[in-house]
Length: 233
Image 1 (cartoon, rainbow, N blue to C red):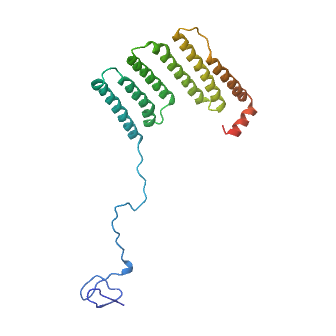
Image 2 (cartoon, rainbow, N blue to C red):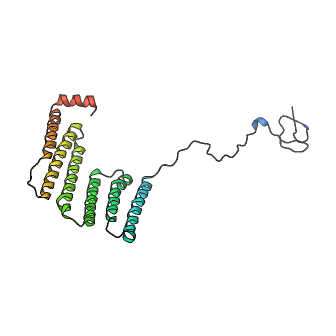
Image 3 (cartoon, rainbow, N blue to C red):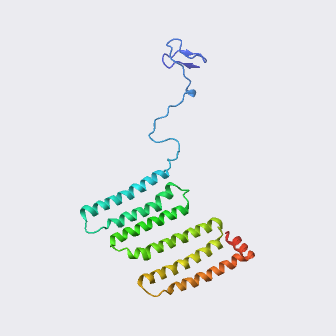
């Protein structure tokens, strides 16, 4: 038995309104409790991830601001020498190494390597303008940079076709030996000394021993399979 909350008259079980005062009849069990408004989210959600384009814009703005600020300081406040060229070149080099791989994750390593080597060459010329000397660039900087670029391209080419540890390892040690020999010979030519290998011969000997070991493992199928099985190469 129920009664009207307004006038107290007795109500039938199926009635929707009070016959006397027409007050709506509501069942407390069917009432939905109104939720209080909360300033916090009620459902667990995920924060929207940062887009690669936004990261690229952020890094680019930082490098540009640093380069422009240092250039203005060099021109108006500290005009004694061209030290801002070093900062501008460094910002450009860092941009080529960070922004393209972030914005374009599928950028090929070979293209990225060529762009980075080109930027290194430009940076070397900026250092030459700062030091008013370009002889060391032509005889040391550019040859070493080009040698490193060529060796990296060869390593990436080998790695694209042969991704086994033994092949990559033998290629790496061979290129280290070549790079050390080239650097020593270039330094000797720059200094006007007779061309002969000295300290690089030690590196060359170690790399030859390692290469012979790896190539021997590579030529013996059972040894190669055992190494791949144990080390999951």
